[in-house]
Length: 397
Image 1 (tube, helix red, strand yellow):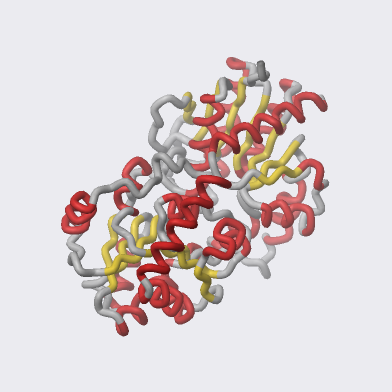
Image 2: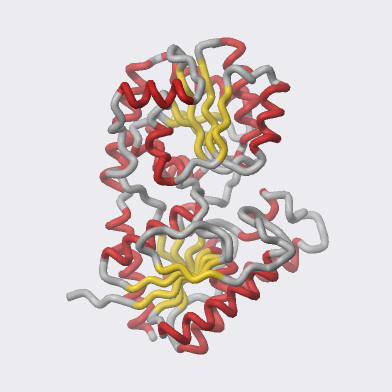
């Protein structure tokens, strides 16, 4: 019988918040519990609870009660509180493994791993400084870049093992940060293909489409994720304007947060008010229903270091996917993706138009992408690989 573990996960974010790294944390914790492990998650005060998961939250800070996403100077206070919460929790549950998500999670987890004499596993989902630059929180030419880069280089050397969400991220660690390759294990994001599945009836799809005010004859391009410039939201709107100018039967369903009003105003300035619907935040549990409206999915993310788990949700739903040609997209979609030149709104519009022009080819691409998700990206297999990492770091100690 396989050994199981008491795992303390440190999630320096407002878990759970229906996007990105939160989905990876949730699914990893869920599958590890299914495999018999005891998982406790320490996270910030904000966020919503998830049934079945043991979540321990920090106390709030009075001057920043609504923090949800992005880089912020206030995270210093959040992380100090998280260190205390994680320490109290660790002394109570006496974990076998400290599993730190993101760089802050590894940084917070390191002293705990030393105190308790247990391994630290770092769940790396992209470069810290790269993300801060993408978020325009850090100027690569400014005085704070080198100290931030130095700190990142120190953090990636702290853990017993590093799990990455893509092979591209693993290469980044070995080539740019000179980490030892034998400490790095690529375990890509995965997807629950039973939950994300094209199982909605035509009647329910039509009803949801109507409730959103989307004319029934419209071909729908769907996007689900954060709304921000590093996510390519502005580029997506400019591509939409070009496409709608040529095809009036196209509608864009843009699902996510924050900055909804900002991008709605931008869409209106581009003349898209009757061809774009912004839903705001979509609960994770409702995502498959909303994605089922789509004829094609789009992933305009321009970051070269972060993962892109939304691609797997699109794939599992049987949707053809248009993406900028970046390494993570190639890793997941392979030859089945439809690619646009990175950062080029015109190229993105042309790629979307090409998919919409051939319904049969689009349907075939979607079916093949779903099969790829089923055969290569299941959370059960990922959970087994994570436990292999736990076995390895435990045996070394």
